[in-house]
Image 1: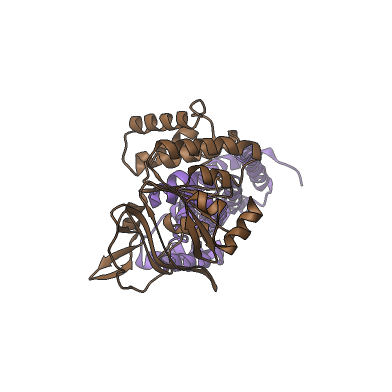
Image 2: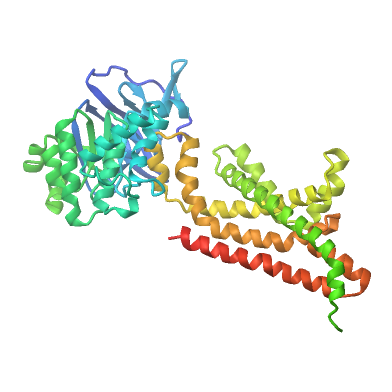
Length: 271
Length: 215
C-alpha cells in the first residue's frame, strides 16, 4: 500500500476551526481515467452525524475508504483532528506519510463494512479483543471486559463463544459494530452497513446504531440508502453527484425541500 | 523366476537403513519445504521490489530446473566455495529447497483466496503488518491449502530416491544396490510395497484432514 501521490505539495491554509474533526482539502481520487472525487472540499465538526447520499458511483464510499486509508488520495490532503492523515510535514512541504504515522492517526477512526468482514478464524469475543490488546496495549482482562460490555450493548452478550459463521448476517453486523467501537474511535465510518442484510434483519442493526448515535459523542460518517435512518440520526446530509457535494443541509431541509434538481431526482427515485 | 525369501532376509538390514534415511529425508525435507515455501510466498507479497524481484527469480529458477541437477550442484559445486555437507544433509536441503518453490505457489493461492475485506478489516482496526499476517491472513490461508500441501509430502516421498545419485541411499537406493549385486528382484519388490505402505495411509490421513478443515 504505497502512497499514490509521490509529489510533495504546498501546505494548504492551516486555519482550522477548533471543533472541526475531519477536513478534506481539494481531494482528488482517480481510478484509471475515471475521476471519482474532483477537488473535494468538505469538513465535519466533532460529534456530528453526517450522512452521505447520492447515486452509486458518486464517490460517497470513496470518501469513507480514503478516511480509513484503504485508498490514498491522488491530490489534496485530509486532516483528522488537525493531523494530516496520509501526509507529513517535512521542511515546510507536505510529503506522503510513512506507515507508522498513518497508523497512529488511523487509530482514531473505526469502520463498519457492508460485508461485515469479521475474522472467521476467531470467536466473537476474540474478534473484539484482538485489536485493543495488540494495538492499544490493553490487558487481556480489560479488553475482555470492554468486549463483553459492547456485546451486551449490541444484544449479543450470550454469543461470545460463537464463530462468526454461526451467526445470522444481522448478528454478524452487530458484532462488527461492537468490534469497531472496542477501539474507542473518535470517528465511526458506516459503509452501507445494512445493504447485505435480509430485510427482516435490518431493523435490529439500525436500532443499535441509533442507540449509539444518541448516547455517545462519537462522530459518524454514514453512507446509506436507508433514508428514514438517515433522517433519524443525521445532523447533516450531504448530497453527492459526480464527485462533488452539490447540496448539504439538515435532514429536514434536504428531505423535504431540496434545492437542487439532482437531489430531487435522486430522492424521488429512492424514497 | 522364483520368489526366494532368503534374498528378502538378506536384504532386510539394508532395507531398514534405507527406510530410516527415507523417513529422515521426508521429515526434514517437508519441514524445510513447508516453512521456506511460506517465506517465499510472503516475500512475494512484499511492497518492496528489491525483495519481491530476487525471490521471484530464485524460485522460478529452482522450480524450472531438475531436482537431480540441484542435488549434484549442492553436493559437488557448493563445497568448492561454501559448506560441504553429508549426502543426507545435502539431500534434505535439496529436496526441501526444490519443493519449497512448489509449496510457495500453494501458499500464494491460499493467501490470494483470503477475501480483500479481511485485509481491509485488519487495516480498519490498525493491526500491525505482522499481526495481520499471523492472526488474520495465515490462519485462513493455511487452513484451506493443507490438503494441497499434503500432496507434496507424497510427491517428496516418491522423489526422495533421487538422493541416491549423491550417495544418500534411501530404501530404493539400497534395493537397487542389492539387486544389481545379486541379480535378484526381491529387494526391489519389497521396497515397492514399502512405498505403498507409507504413502497410502499418508493420503488417507490427508483426506481425513481435508474433511475436517475444508468446509
